[in-house]
View 1 (cartoon, rainbow, N blue to C red):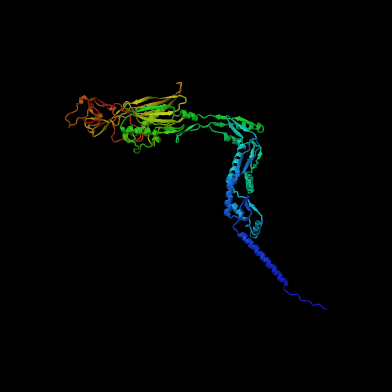
View 2: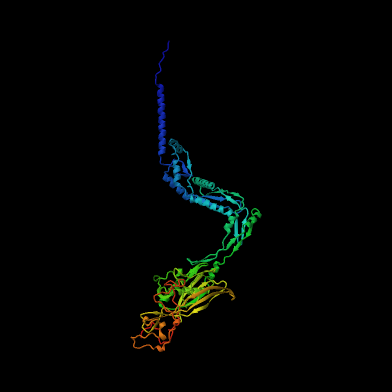
Length: 629
């Protein structure tokens, strides 16, 4: 029996492929859906912790709060001891660091925990399934860079390490410089030390919360050793040591602004070559020393505090005469110099101390010199304080740097001991040439019915010296007589000019003798010659009477209109050799070297008795200030 062949249907293999593709597609879709589901979750995967702090299934906010709370509650139980080892027998520097004191970045820590399973879309699904089936993940807490508590621990140890370095290789002990040869120099890799400390604290945090999860409590601690490298010190920089040790001696001084005494400094020095030699001769680790040269200051703080302004170096008093305005000017200018303090080397300037003598500053109009004549000017009389201060300075050994005598002798201080001033032109200056501050003290007072001006120069007379000024007067020139015409003068009379007082001319040689405490002469200083001019006695006459030097028999010519003629027989003739006629149309030239500026000159000395007319004719000078009867 013959068999029958059955034909195979087409398309069976394709169906299998389609089924397989559908299955694979479904699985892929399911996988992708799982991954999408895992990536879309807001919660952290199961079995995820931050350094063993469980944050499973938490949102970012919940995880951050949990990390912060757990570390705040239990962080003080996490203690790391950081030790800086050293080869010496002294205790090693150390410091403690606890997790509770640190600023942990809880937000970033929670973000890192949430990131588990969210790193890659195609692995998110398996990660979720794995953690649901028991797989676990742990991320460390995040410690920020330059975390303050950790930085403080490391910086403190760095400072202690520096304290043991070569900078402590020498020490000043009294009058000697002591040094240790071969003092060790330590070097620390602080970047590696920071990594070690960071790893140590992270390890302890994990250990602490592992114990907490197992129901165990208590502190966890661990030491971290920081091992520096050490080397034997090479020869030190001896010149650098000298620069650090050397001190210039400095006297105590007075701070004028704060009115406080600044401290003194003892000078310190040493022989650099001697230090090198001693170092080379010393053994390793041996302590050796060399002598220091100590220079004591001339003036210490104690010296200055006890001797400041203790002595009156010089004193002078003058009598203030003249009008109330002049007395006021004298007092005002003297007050401007009162309590003036000069440090050693400083220069006193009268013009700088008083400033311009103007009405705005309170100065009044009083007699002053201008081109040799006495006039009323603002500030008249201010040369009396300058002269009185100069007279006081002459009783000291202070250096005088500028001084000018008056045109005419003043009378209120001895000849050769006055000092005229003119603001902007002539000044009186002296220098504090002592080693201590000095002070000028002025005072005005009334005594015996007269106004007095007193000046004291205070300072410190270390050597007990005494100074005495003297002056020899020579070349005295008596006032001559000068007649000036004036139509306002009654005929037949002469009127004495009481404003232009007559002055005797003379010269004065001034010396200053300095005596030692035992009375012996140390020095006699020649202060030069002061030349004072003569000013004549001035009479005014009526020009209708003619020049008095031409009067016959000393009598004026008879006025035809008068009823009482002058008796010519009773008046001796005028001696024309004793008179100095004046040209009323000319002005006597001023002496710019000795004539002060208006407003700064002094009141003249009390006038000598006026020179009478050259005969006793019965005529008498008429006082223009007299009150008519």
